[in-house]
Length: 479
Image (tube, rainbow, N blue to C red; front, side, top):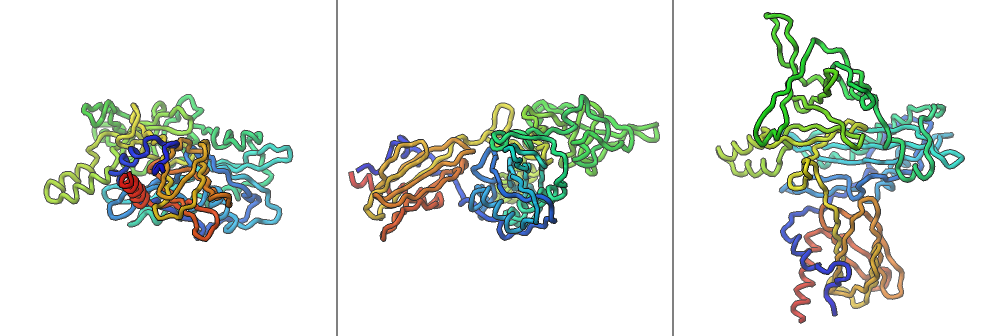
C-alpha cells in the first residue's frame, strides 16, 4: 500500500522538510456580524456583492502570540457572503429603493508596528452599479476609503475598522440621488469582469500637464490639483547623499524664502500639510519629512522612496539583548538606520503602504509575493478502513485510504480551489476556497464511523505537520 500519494506532488516528502523550520501561527479568522453600521436611509439597496480583488486568498496579515508571529487574516466565510449578510442585517431595505451591485476591488487590513506605537489599518476600494432593463449597468458611485486606529492590541480592532470603511462607503452611496446623471454605462460582461468604474477612475491631478503650485492642506486638494495658496514663497532643494542607505535617492528639503537679512530662509515644517507642489514636482509629507511622488505605471497609484521600514523583529531582539548594546541596537532600528524603502500611495483611497518586504523584492525593491499555495490532505492512521475518493480542481481523482496523504499546489489568487471527498457510493462533500499563499494549508479527511459524507477539517500547521510526519514514520516502520 502506498503511504503517500505522489500523483499530485512527487516530492511530497521533500516539501514537508522544507516547512519543518518555518514558524507559523494559526490563521486569524473573524466575522463582522457583531459590528454596527450607522447608515442613513437612501434611495439604493445593495442586493449583490462581487469579490473582484486581485488576491482573494486573505484580507491581510496580523501579529499573533507572544512572539508576534505573522499570521494570515480572513473572514470565516467568503467575502461576498460576509459583506452581504452584514448589509442585509444592518441596512434594511427602504420602500422603493433601487437595487445596486457592490463590486469590491480592495478590502484589506494591515498592522503598522513602530518603535513606540501600533496601528490597525483598513482599506476599501469599490463601486456601486445599478442594473438596467437592457442588462447593462450604470456606475452610480466609485469609492475609496481608509481608516487607521492605534491601541495596545490592534488585532482586535480589525473587525470594527473594516465595518467603518464599509459604513463610510454606504453613507456616500446614500447621499447620491436616484435621479443623478450616471457618468458611465457598462455591459454585463464588463460589469461582471471588473472592468470600468473604480478600475478606470482618474483624478484631476493625473490629467494635468503640470501640477498647480501651492500647499495641499488635505488629500482632496491633491486629487483635485487645487492646492491652497502657500503661506510664504518657498523653494524645494535636493540634497544628494552617498552610502547604501540612500542608494542614489536625494534628501528633499523645503524652505520658506527669506525677504531680507533680518528674515532669512527657514525650514518649512511638514506637520500641518498633506504635501505641496512647486509647479513641477509633487511632494508628500510623510512621517515629518517630504518625499517626491511619481506616478506608477498602473495608473492607480503613486510611488515614492521614503523612510526605512520599521523592523519589529530586530527591535524585539535588541530589546531582549538589553544593556548598552541592546539599547544601541534598538535605537538604531527604531531611528531609521536601515535603507530607504519604496512606498505606494493608493489614489482611490489615499492609503500609504510600504511596498518593501525584506528577502522578497524585485530589482526595484518592490515586494514579490509567493506565487504558489501548498495544500496537504491526509487521513489519520487510526481512521476507519473505508476508502475515500478525493477530487481537486484540474486533477484526476484518487483513492485516499487511512494512513495516507497527498499534496497539491494552487497558483490562482482569484479563483477558488474546489476539493471533494466521497466514501464509497455515499454522498459527496465539497468545499471551495482560495488557499493561503503565505503558508501551507492542512486538511484532515474525517470519515464518520456511523456513515455519512466525509469532511475536510482545517487543522493548524503544527497539528498537520505532526500527523504527516507520523504517517511517514509508520510507513517507514512497515517496510
